[in-house]
Image (tube, rainbow, N blue to C red; front, side, top):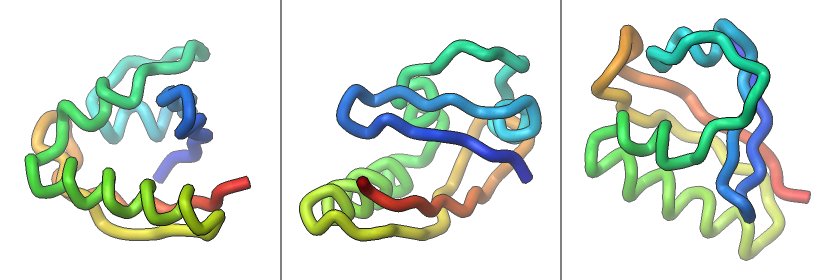
Amino acid sequence: MGTWCRDLRDKFIWGDAAFLNLRGFPPSNEPRGLADFTDRMTPQGQAEMGEMVTRAIAASESFDGQLAVVNGPTTLACAGGGVR
């Protein structure tokens, strides 16, 4: 399990070493582009994430779901967050 912070408007993600490792990335303090993560998802997972985040932004609500990751050691990731 890891922790992360997302900037959905500018499409960046910052994650701790555990979060990045779960997705097959080396540790870094620099933000990564959202596409770095979505490119590692199944097409269905990409579509589900896009819908989940778009609904959350439009309604200023929280979101959660499970997303399939196909590259890296993790095959299923839970995602959740809130919109401010």
